[in-house]
Length: 125
Image (cartoon, rainbow, N blue to C red; front, side, top):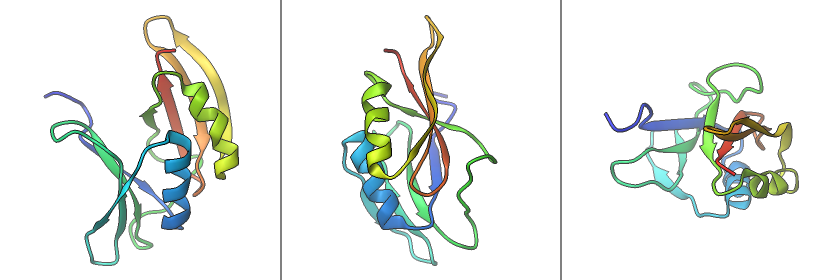
């Protein structure tokens, strides 16, 4: 096993708004994925054997949440402050400012995305 996580899905209410939000804060391109069956997906970049995931809209299966469910830590290296500096302008909120976890594990912060999801950020600087 290379990674404990292989895939993640972030629930959204407005797929276009969420697509714009994540591209703006991380400054990389996400790709639409047609899966049919009343699911709309926008994929995050990832390597073939690495971890990746998607924004997903399906009213029957997914609901954004600020307080419930798993807390996903997204890679914000080299410095998560650069990502945090773009969150509010992109339509999100900062719930926990950048703070040191410890010297070995780096830094974390928590944001509320444009859809109301609680998402953590991690970097080593």
